[in-house]
View 1 (cartoon, each protein chain N blue to C red):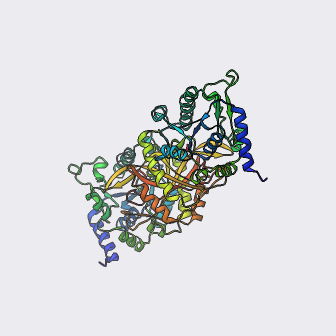
View 2 (view 1 turned 180 degrees about the vertical axis):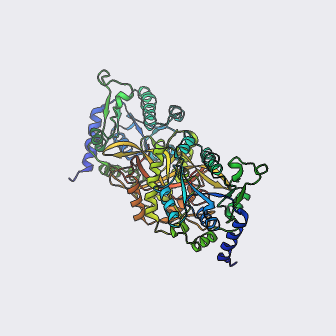
View 3 (view 1 turned 90 degrees about the horizontal axis):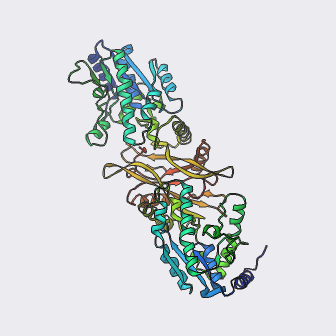
Length: 312
Length: 312
């Protein structure tokens, strides 16, 4: 089915203007293509009546918060950077169960940080980056339902006046990318490899601490630099909780283990492992084991299924 | 230096006969080339006055205890199989620290099982498989000193009459293999890939239990079958303690992670990673993730140093 994406954009801009009227709308940016596209679309419709925030949750990649804010500034869109690192690290302290970690991140984001921003800006309209695949996976029971209003403590039945707007709900990822390109989003957002909601916390097995985040962040930077020209669907680094014996300067040491994962996929529902050249694998191992405290680097050989893309 | 290995064998047989006289000697077999060679050499010198035991410590590979005993039976050498599985599993219960695990295995072997066999057989001569590399590594502080008499509770100063014989103490691994070949040991012992003293316990990160041993044993069998024609120096499977998210039958599951390691080396002091063909890696992943409870298979990319060969 050929979709007229320019027509889609015009319709959505009109529809947003009608719905919001002269009210205030808010949205949260993550650096991903869905939310970035929503931001540009909503900004085109509402201008300064759109308030966009970017929450630094301490789980971002090296330099990511500043990079995203600058990128939108160059497009004439002001993004408010909220430093919530302490709140997230506190919420994650002592948690090792993957579900509890994910829940702590969701709760801190919606109940604490986003709810506060909604109240402060007096916004009655909340933009969400939901795409068709999210809806399908929620219906199929693969993804958890995220009712944004309930999550920020607003009962949609009682709180007359709050509305959630999901401009991309009829598109899949490829459609979103086409809309993003027409809207003039930079290619490194439009074709950015997927990055999970819980960010680097999805790549730490065991407790999420500042020190462990620094380790996985350094590994992520190496993996992204080494593999960006592969054209792979997604590539990432995972820090395990286990330690392995190693030898450094002639002495026995216990070191941490980093998993490198690189996959081929069209929609992330199924994935195969990228057959990286040995030269690249050896270089990854050498660079990653030079991160302080890391003495092992392993490559994940498992397709999806039976593995998932991320580790938690 | 050209060594006359036939001459070496004759000298050692003579020397053992002189030293043991009409006494009783004992040794413990493991299935490795060093101890196997000592067994054949000592049996040639002493015949039935050599008592050889094989201790099933629950940490052996699939079918290994029976296979070793049968192999020596075919060479006319009787080996007593001692089932000490319960003792070892009890000693390892709740231990997760690598050093504590190694110590528990050493103590259970020497203090409990071997000491009892020495007393029962009334042996005053104990054969050991020590080779020159072991002595060099002990001197260099890389290996721990294993004083066999002290370990079985005999004070060499007080207990006049106990003697340790180390017939291979002047040879390195290649020399041992030549002696083994001349003595008629089967090729699968002579050229067997190295297997560590703590056996499969060296390949389990975290607690060693019967269930976890069964998992790493199944993975070991797959790895050895798939990689035996590679000509690699050593190949092994490791069970990590961490769990990762996976998907099975459309449902989320937490599964265990198996590391496959395959290395090239001449003496195990340094090692590089074998560049296995992708076809083999994919097949390993498919077979290993069909082991119940396992949903990830990763390949270790780390040379030695900074990693060691084993994980604990």
